[in-house]
Every structure is written in C-alpha cells, then in structure tokens.
Image (cartoon, rainbow, N blue to C red; front, side, top):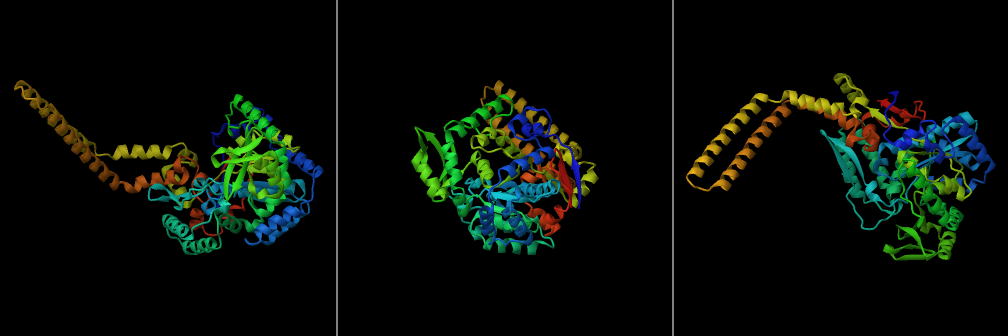
Length: 538
C-alpha cells in the first residue's frame, strides 16, 4: 500500500478560496488554518475550561454497548480530565455511507494526533453522529459496480413518516437482502464470507440506522480510540437542556445575524448555502420520532403543516424539562457542539465549510468563539487492477477525472466500427428511397393519392435499416467487449456518477478486496490536511 499526494483543481469556490491566502472567504472565519491558529485556539479553550466529567460519562455510556477499546478508554479518561477535542460528524448511512464518512473519521484521528504532538497536550478525536437527521432518502442507499454499470442499491423499506435515523427501526430481513445483493456485486474473494458474517452479526445487534452505523464505525476505528456520540442520545439531550434555553433566548438575534452574514456571503460571490431567513427558529420540535422545523411567527414557534404552535414560555419549559423533544439544524448544531465540547477544530466537507461561513456572528451572539475549520481529507483508493489498467492505457487518475477514459472509449469504438457494412446499408437505403420517389411521381401523374401510405412504408423501412445498423454495431462492440470494459472499469472505479469515488462507494467494497485490515493499514500513512488529494494504492 502506497500513498501519493496530487494537486487537482478545486471546483468548489469556497474551498478553493479557503486554501488561498488573502481571499474574501477568510473574513467569515475566526481562524485561518495554520499552527499559530491552533496555539491561539487552545489558549482560548484553556481560558474557558469547564468540568468535562459529565460529558465524558455520557459518551462512555453511549459507547459501552459498542465495546470500549483500551485506546477509547484512554481518550475518555483524557476528556474527563480536560483534554480538548477534534470533532467531525456524519449521517448514519448504510454500511457507513459513502467513503467520505471514513475519510472524515481518518481526518479527525490524524488531526487530533498531529495537534497532540505539536501542542504537547492530549487532543481527543470525537465523531458526532447526526442521528437526528430525518431525510432517510439521503442515507438509505449505496452504489456498487455491476458489470460495466454503476448501480444504486436501495434499502427498500419506506415510511411515510419523517422519523429520525435514530428512531427508525431497521427491517433486518430487508437489510440482509440488500447486503446480499451488494456482496454479489462486489464479487467473491477470500474475505467475502467472513465479511458478510461480520456485517450480518452486527446488523442483528442493531435496532436502528444509527445503531448499525455506530457499531460499524466503532469496529473500524476502535483501535484508534475514536469516540462516538449520537446527537439524539437521551442523556446528551438532558445535558444540553441549558444550551437549548440559551439558543431560545437569543433566537431572533441568531436568525438575524446568520441571514445578514449569508447575504454578505452572496454579495461576495459565494452563494447562499443555507437560504436563511429572519423567521427561522433553527430548531426542530420532535414528536413521536418525527422532526418538525420551527419558524417564529407573532412571538410563537410554529410549524403550520404539523399544527404545532408553541409560545416562547412553552419552548423554554420544554428545553428545561423535555430537551429530548428539541433538535438542532445546520445553524444550531455547530453552536451546540461548541457548548458541549471543547472543540479545538471541526472537520467538515466542502458543503459544511460553505454553511459554516455564515455562522461566525451566531457564535458571538451566544458568547462563543467559532473553532478552527479543518477541511476533511480527500482520498481515492486505487486497486491493483485499476493501477494496471492506468499503466496499460498510459493514463493518470487525474486524466480519468478529466474524462479521458471515456474519450478513448468513444475513439476506440469509432475506429472498430464496420464502415463497409454501414456504407452498404446507406446505399441500399438510398436506392430504395429513390424507388419510392419514382413511384410517388408516377402515382401523382396517375392522380392516385397514396402519400400517407408511402410515408408510412418509408418509415417502416427506415426502422428496419436502423435496427440492422444497430445489430451490426452491437456485434462489433461484443467482439471488442474486453477492451471497452477496461475503459469503463477506469471510469466506474475512479469517477462513478461523474464524481469522486468517495461520494458513491462504501468502504466494504474495498475491504472485500483488500481484507479486514484495510482501514488499519490506511491509518498507518502520514496524511496532512491541506489543498491536495491523496491517492491510496492498495
């Protein structure tokens, strides 16, 4: 296994500018990404230190059913004793969701280790599972390769209710069927049987999407001591009670400053990532596992579609006595993380970077300071077969991203087409249509009106000529299927759905090929967060 760092054009303007000095985006963040910022931030956290025993106990209690490793226990003790954290998070996707969930976790772990050495103090990695998210259509699928096609494999169970991932039970039979289909797409290797047994055993210990996700993430990262917490955890919600009251008390001001900041962001050319409004409460009300987004209207917190209307006093009472009935959105989740944990840095993707750019003043409203934003690592896994094909076709990974594999495929198909057969078909077609034109002229002279029948006949013949041409082309393509498949393999492996591999495939596709130690081996390499993309050859 070897690691290579390459420079690639960044299509996301916010991220591109974040890695460039003296660009407008930096005014939207408290810190630039450098060593001096980490030193400054840790001093700030020292000055605002608070007792962390209770939050450490909550995380410990959440992780106990998952299995607490020696390293995780060490990190829990350090957190209890005042260690700062690097935090990242993700929705509870099937089989961990896309690879970038794993890349986020690796980013969190590596950054925590790096800063622990540089700052000469414990820095603990924490993964915040967004179990409160209710858009199950975002997490109920994964992608695989079947033949020369990228297939979307979807968990078939549907619910009319918009329940949170942590409140949505998994139909184990349906999920098992899905995993068997996925495994069939992966193909049989020496690791497949043991891998499938592990996945099904883990599924049988899980009740919800979040349970399944947390179990798998802990299996992958327990040796590194990655701490996990679910946003909807009951004990965590009770701990957050006072934080919710703080958010409710400053609700109007939070909405106003976020809306103003987003308008500034748009004027600077960065768009509107949140579509914030002054009426947004930036909180959800939870009822029977469903989340209902609240707005402020006439001093009340409402969701008209769900027939919810709560006064400020009622909201404060709920925050105090039933905080599990409240849930954060993209604005308040970062604020809540900051109030719960001593966040040295937050690790996020390009989308998160964009909406964090609207939040600096919202942190200030609550008397908080925005932590350092650390863009996650970008990693593409290159298998031996793909590496061999790249050499054979004299292409780089970046060439495939630029569409050159597809260009070579189209060029090859054009070269192998049977031009003589195509020419003969065109000649036959022209001769026949000439005869039709002669017949049409004759019938016109005889005052016989059969124009519609002649047109219909010509259309039928055209279809037959097209069908014949298509069959000849298919025969030629079948004859050269092996070569064409090579081009499609490169495209599907490195640029599925016209995007990076990490956005489509889950890690088990590569664990099935490389073995159960894949993530452990990945973590042995030296990564640094920055303006580059890593290629990992396995």
